[in-house]
Length: 255
Length: 224
Image 1: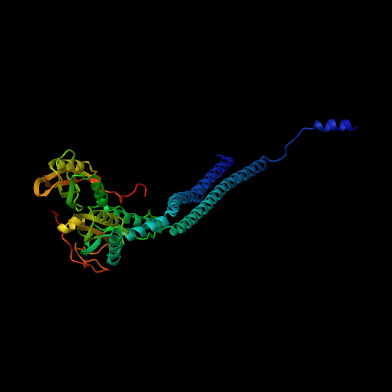
Image 2: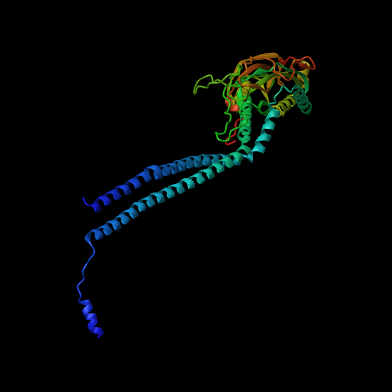
């Protein structure tokens, strides 16, 4: 091989070496870095899209908030967070007065747990996770039982306050009183009643006695990991007991 | 004169007096320069590729930073609305509790009102007893008899005759949410007479209240 051939070979090898070394040591790592950054960017953009969708969802929900808050306030009047017996007594006496009946006995019993506790959602502190919420309640109405723990800060426990009323009046008045009970600000479930006249004189005068059993409700917030509350335990925040204004009349069959 | 001179010059023979070693050395040097330029060009290509890649990295960095800052802005904005789902869930949970509490409600005032309009003229009631089974889950079996209802209503009353008791039972059967109108007894009572002087009859009857009587006032509304 002459000088020209040698020099050409050396130059070619050098050029190839320079290209290879430059590609593998300089260009390729940079290209890899760029690809990695683009991949991170795509991931971040996908997360942003999710966040954007969630934000739009939240913005769409935002106008509902005042309505929902008003609805919650209304429900809390129907099912307060304490026995609220004074208010209940006033509502009952007002209903009796408007219906024209004589409300002789109001006898509430001790609140008892109705259903398993319903978890209330804790205030969401994170913005990247999906929205936390509560699911609907499940269970059997009126089943006394124990509280089940839930992974929430607090749980709202539903309690019933059994109530017995004794009222007297005419059939129409008693029917009107029942209607007013069903329209009380605080919801009341009538579970049974007996209507009749105990005395012949009452029957002649058209006066009937109504002995009514029902229940009103309250909620009580308890920690999610609280020990089970036994059925029949007293509810905090108020006293319960009979508020009898007169001896309850006994319904019976007229002659 | 000048024409002759030109002709003479053109016809002179060209003689290369340069030694061949020197010419070869010149060619080699030219080749070396060319090869050096080629190597430098390859380095230039590498440099150009590196610059382009570095530009890509810089652009990707900028894009990522931009995306990150958008994400932070979105998170900040999302925090402002973070309590909405919890608030709405709280309302929904409260509504569900109310629905459970009042799911067995029957508007008894409506029932009494209907009865007052439907009681036959020759029948009068002396006692009505309502018992609603609100604490038990009622399982209805299609076609089964007797129908398992959500409660019962018992009536005691008097009528002009047994046929009036039959009419009363038909009235009961026609009431919405009532099923299986039945009676326990219908007995003549000579102590109470009708305007015509005949003895009246005392009767007791009962009816099963079905789930059709439930008010559903507090059921969860679709879409709420």
